[in-house]
Length: 118
Image 1 (cartoon, rainbow, N blue to C red):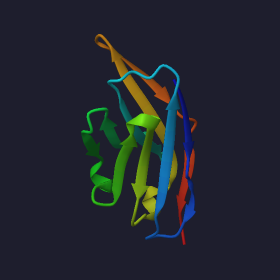
Image 2: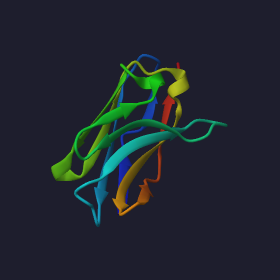
Image 3: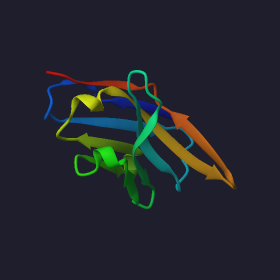
Image 4: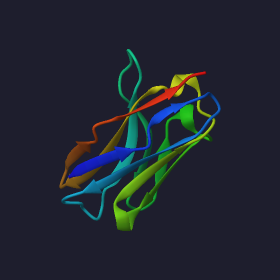
């Protein structure tokens, strides 16, 4: 599975950005996709996650500001980020996961930088 991200960049506080991630290769019909981020000096953390059934979950820090969605036909996941804050500055990584029996297989994108600064 290959993941190609796009949409990062620099924005002022309060601004918006939309990230996209297109998956290709051996895509399972039942899977999950999501976004993680890693800020300077921090560990990678989950931002938002969506299953092939449409269930979503978000980190508390981004609830009400970020929205994750997906286009199953295009195997693409989006992250709409509104009301961005300086603490949202990080490298954002797309993740794809599927299960083979009890084993989870994770794939990662190359990362895209999001910088929120005045």
